[in-house]
Image (cartoon, rainbow over all chains, first blue to last red; front, side, top):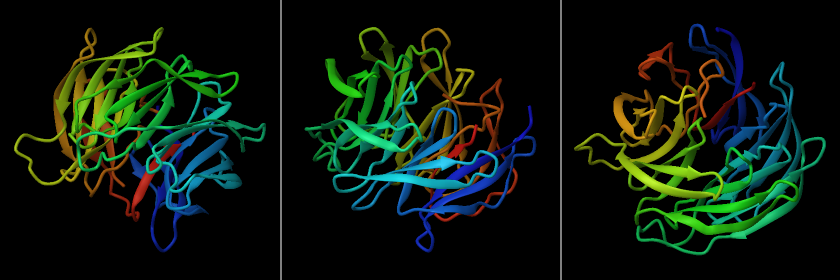
Length: 309
Length: 32
């Protein structure tokens, strides 16, 4: 099904930082030249609400924060609704919970996570949760917590955090009526020292979770128990080609909507790696490695006609 | 910014079209 979509791209061009918009033709793969649609300071990761009516942006830098925008879905025009300042440096990741009533963000530099309720107009309202992580691990970049990624699970009953500094996937019970977080039992899954978990992705079947380890350049595979909120690791695979010795850090991870393939990027090797997902076990098998065609592939996404989880 | 086609049967990526220049892109999202 070919169609034209609008796509937002955040740009940290020092001359003019902000959110650009471009048209994407899925039949030809043509992307138009992005045009600045909203200037905003130090834009980084962002997300759209489940209905694409609102956009929530991490403004990194110090001080940083989270911005809320209203979206004109026809033109892509953005209207700033409000902004909530962080403690210190801004967050690295923002998501909307399954109910569409809360925004969750992970603050990398501050090593904490927080939750905001959303007002009826989509603006950020009250801070309903704030949890400071405490810990460290073995790598020189792990002297303190670095909360990097924060989303709810498919049931919206748990919130998972990839903490790069602590080598932990921290699991909270999430109360969608109040927006509050409480530690799960057990409160985290530990990964091997020096892994540096950055981002996670749920397989479409909801039973497997895959994490990208930024420091060790690996994909870590877990079984997810959605009743207990527990993770059990069953595999890890390298993302870099054998013999690659130059500096490189893994970045983004996604699963195709059909559940058959997983994709990961390497910043340094500047590549995208493709793995086949075993339908019975969830185990990954290397399929392909391609050049990203640029430098430092921090992020990628599937267009709506192919989809990703 | 680069675009790849995805073969849904094999999972393999193939670069498509002409790369689009953009200074330090950080993240992206499609309006649905």
